[in-house]
Length: 70
Image 1 (cartoon, rainbow, N blue to C red):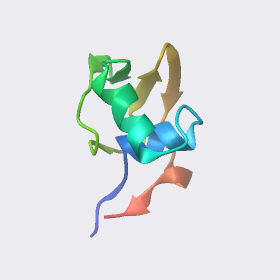
Image 2 (cartoon, rainbow, N blue to C red):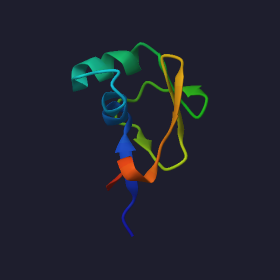
Image 3 (tube, helix red, strand yellow):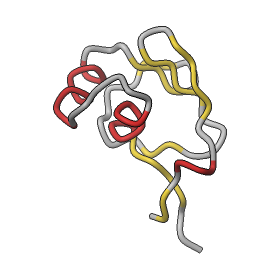
């Protein structure tokens, strides 16, 4: 069975914090993003259902509807 996920950079764009992949990368690399409570600097980190993502102080939970097949 294939893994379902969304990459962190795509999630940052989806939530409206960046309009391009380059902007998303800068936000992630500047240590303004946490995944499950830990600072995450991997642009293409795979997120799964239930992961908690904090982007510049706003928290989101990854939902099934935003995932793609891996």
